[in-house]
Length: 133
Image 1: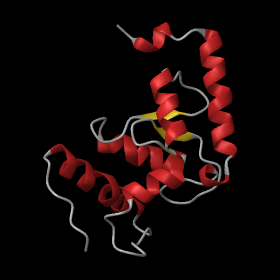
Image 2: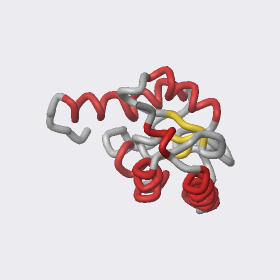
Image 3: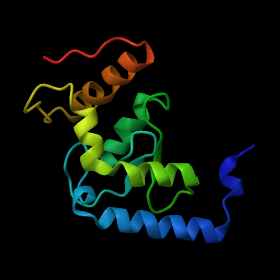
Image 4: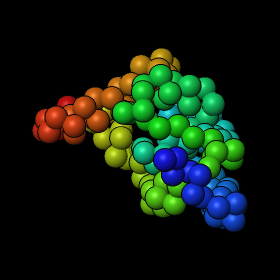
């Protein structure tokens, strides 16, 4: 059964207000990946807000890596809202970018996004120890 069907209109409205508030925080005012202003999309399992362009790249990674939702249009589950509240772009980037070399090139944004998330998630999935370069 679709869990989102169990989210009432009232709860959905409450979630929207929370998400709108999170998007106004300084650390969430730009895309977690490309740094463009005013992101309106999110990866609910990575805990980040992203722009439309990066949301397309995240969708291409597959839902086993990134589950993309609109921060303003989609229905969110309570646990998704709670997770993004606990993370946000600054905290999430400190985790997801920890394995990248300093000043990693963001010019090829798709390569940057793949390097940032795919490798780390695969390491965790297969319990490969993380190494620092």
